[in-house]
Image (cartoon, rainbow, N blue to C red; front, side, top):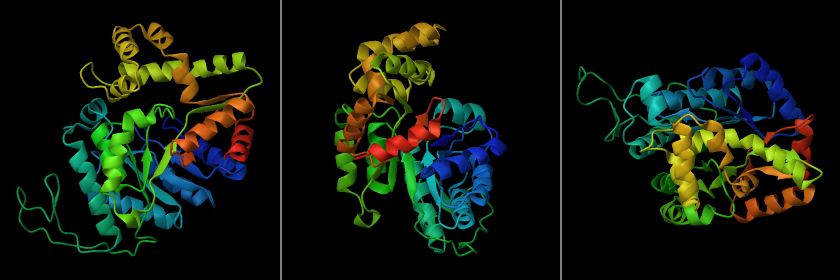
Length: 341
């Protein structure tokens, strides 16, 4: 389950403790132009016992690769091996608008960040000569930089790394170098068409020591008595979907809209984007297909949810990331965990 960036960190502790008691395995802490995720994760590490903690996600542009590695090692030590590092490129609106740095070469930067993290955690003397990062710095500085290694001994030298990606080349990179993949709007019936070739290409280059690629996907979760009730609850996802598909990015660069097109919704994708960017958000949301909302969430009767769980498993999903709604959200989680194949 995700602890959103709009939540109070103090309230997040009570939320996380309730999640832990209900049997939730992982708490994901998001970061956008918000409170930073790292402070909250450190607070949660001191306030929980078994809950795995994941940054979901840290943008690669807002910290140096070495600081990302240091931060992950600290959080893993504080939690005694319960931390996983979630990374992502975010998008130009946030990176250039909020952080004020160029949004360039996201694939190369992601690869280098991962390489640096794994060197730091192994306490290797850090020497990295990449296109995007050089340690020690070769040009533009004093020339006095020295190759150093982490002073502390990390709790683990193989902290799991998850990458949030949906672009074809980015998904290929994820399958090659990451421990886990975080795709948004995962449609189990259309995932193979959208990402099959990318996953296969990345897996062909994957180091066997990484083990199988974990895939984390999901959405709104609710158990209903009727399909009519389910349709009403699924509509809660319309505004969120329209925001990303229509408005999260410029007309010429919207990764979510491109994914929607690869799912086969080319005509809807264009109309939703045009309406949203024109300020007609409700009209844009109304065009999100019912089938898409049903497939990308776990909202429905017990029978429907069990079918969805089977579809997720068949498409390769290994863990569910759920946003339960209703009067007893943690009971929803407990029930769904009991139905998982």
